Length: 278
Image (cartoon, rainbow, N blue to C red):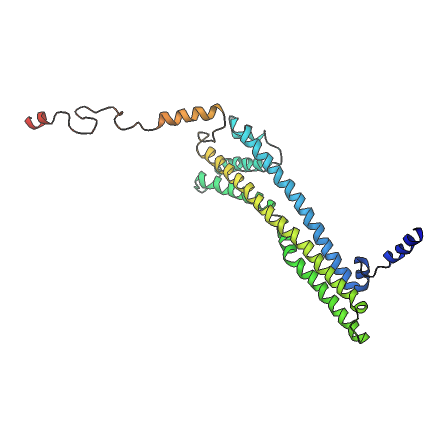
């Protein structure tokens, strides 16, 4: 039993069709292709996890904004409740700076347009930061299969060289180069598929985050344009009060309106015969 295990160990170590053996046989081109694909894979998973954490942080900030931000008496005090490097706080501070700068303009520019432009720039800067690294994922997803295919082509070329040199297409002659070629093709696909999936998933999450930021930006703009009269209604008692205000401000139904003198509820003259006599 021990002798059989001892004999099997050297046989396993001398396997000529493993990954390491294929790379050693392929030479510099195979090693360069393998290292490039490994670098792409490491970069893909690094960007995936870092962008996920960045998106998750902004999503948590949005929940905090919806919970307590609009309960503050003014924007300056409300911004202090947010994290120092919060994307939502950056939008608020840019809006306040734009409002302060408007009074210093020498040319007449509507405050609505000036603040809207500042908010658009702020939101665009946040969107640009969210999109960082996604181009790398798209590049990996589109080029990794071709890089693996390059290794495949080189492996097949080397197999043909061996066949021509030996004069016969035996299995032991072409198995190594063909195995190397297949390994490179598989590595290219293994690197490309996660990159494409990560790219599509992060793009979808970025869209959700951007929509939340856009809604918040619109709320901040409305608040500044109305001098604090317009702001989102918070959940709880504020919603009930807002509903009562809306119902009291709504127009009354026809028939319940106060009648003017000489008119019925349908708008006709109350005493048409009297009018004809006079």
